[in-house]
Image (cartoon, rainbow, N blue to C red; front, side, top):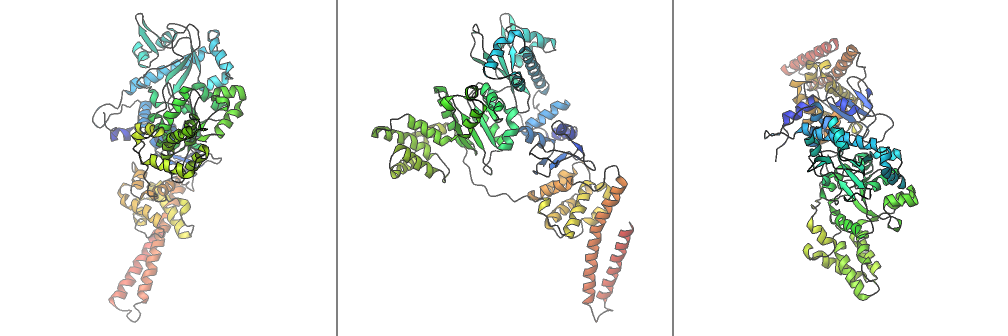
Length: 628
């Protein structure tokens, strides 16, 4: 396995990428002072722009929600990709080849781009075929499910012509090689050469988190089609079915903001939920919901113990749906989020429910969700005759391990009481059965406990609370603190205008606010590299973690003078920092005067003469400072 991406490559990509260009593709940015741009934050809802970008330092910061970072952090937060994925995406954008620290290539980025391009062109081709007369079966299928042309366009639905090689010819005409078409999984090969993999089928493009088309899912509609009901792209360099979720590219923003995701079982169910007003729906692509899918959703949900979200599963009432429920339950405790199950009226899936009952019925199904544990318990009880003693005893044996698996000590007692009520059994008897089940090894337990053993969740250890981050809002509003804040803002943002000599004197000044003093100390440690490359990153690296947000806010506070008025800005910056130095000199003067007063009766002593000399120096220093 290759190692980490070489750090010099990471810095090179960062340096060659204009963060304003990347963010500007998602946010409308407008000038907002010296070297700054401002827009509406993409990470939270707001009406007044508080999202700031400084291309000169390559960073962004939102004063509303506190999100901040460099171009890598922006992509990771916006598209919920890993650092490596963000780096590869930026490298491909500028045509830069990344390497690992062991010397090997991170990947053949050129080949990856070509495969993604081939899928993109194929998706466009399929979409262009959908309105044609030959696509009437596909049009009828969509109309019967109440999906109009606008809905089809929103999800990129298309039609694969019933032709041996129409897509192949089209892609060849666009410059793609047969090897690239095979690498993208768009063609199959036989005795007569390569031919279109998807023929005479309705096609859904499958996109990754960034919105790039990585594969397709195609439904059989024609009677003479001998293939499976659904045919997906095979595993390729860009498509791994266990690592993609259909609809996640459209749902990710709403999932992240609402901390809620709905997991359904098919492409049309995703469409139905989105069109019914539930834009967080996603589905697996030709495979069971598994660990890799959970990892992706946890990343998008921001799934941690600090703020619980919701994961809602929908299952068909048939045997396949029940299998899916058992598999999902086996992985349930990998989520910190609360897990639920939503079942449609009469067992209808979201698509059929929308057809028969309308959008409101879909929303109502999701709102009447049941906790996953309750759903599984009811499934176990439904398999036994509770009117007999033997049936109730068997149901208790099946249900007790499920309740024993509930780790939340505040929830488990409630389920013990509910189970006793559903069974019509004594509470003490049910409690003993649950305790006994909890003491048994997982291999000896029934139902969900055995399922969980196959893929154990990592134990959730209680974490010590992290120190609370400090922001400008936490600072006092007294004049002394305001002066310190404004002086540091000038030094952080425009050190070249303040000047090295004045900054050197300012960082030796005393501060009344200890958080701002920590920022001052970091500047002092970096004063030999004022305003150089990575200036802001070095300052943030020199303060305790809770102070980092404060440094970022100081770097993004709007300066009081417009960019084109540099001469005036220089005067303002220098006078502000000079005021801080002058305050320090005044404090020195006051201290010297007090010491001199304590020498009363020994005015001609050596100490008194020394104090008077130092007073003269301080006054001369102040006059020089005011003159400058």
